Image (cartoon, rainbow, N blue to C red; front, side, top):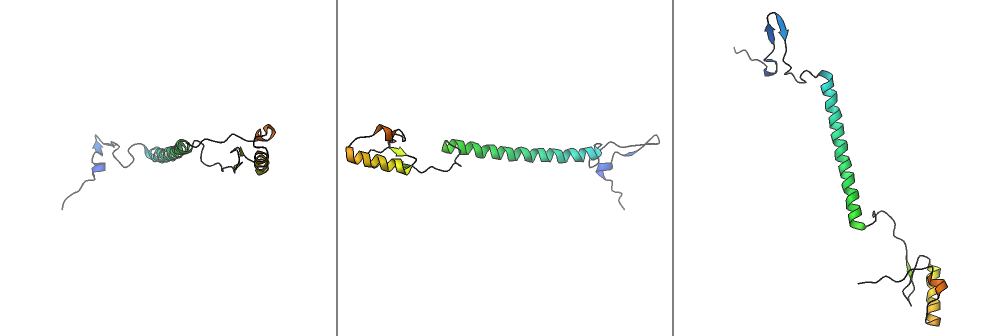
Length: 120
């Protein structure tokens, strides 16, 4: 019959009547601290992976949309006569009536809007 020796414990033995161990076991000579630090480093690793993913998503959103892409788009009303843009529908209707009737813009009305954007 063969006498098999566990390689992890191959260096244990008795030298001059004193037992010695070289620390080649599963956790070495670290004991419970080695196991606890392993968990700590695993949690730290996954936290860094998650932070990197979040940072990448935010960077893609900023690069893609100028704004962060989450904001709700505002409704813009446009005067059909002169093209001025208004956030309120009533100002757009007033501008449209004035432009149609007088063939010009009213400064008191257009101060509530923005000039038309150029489409190139």
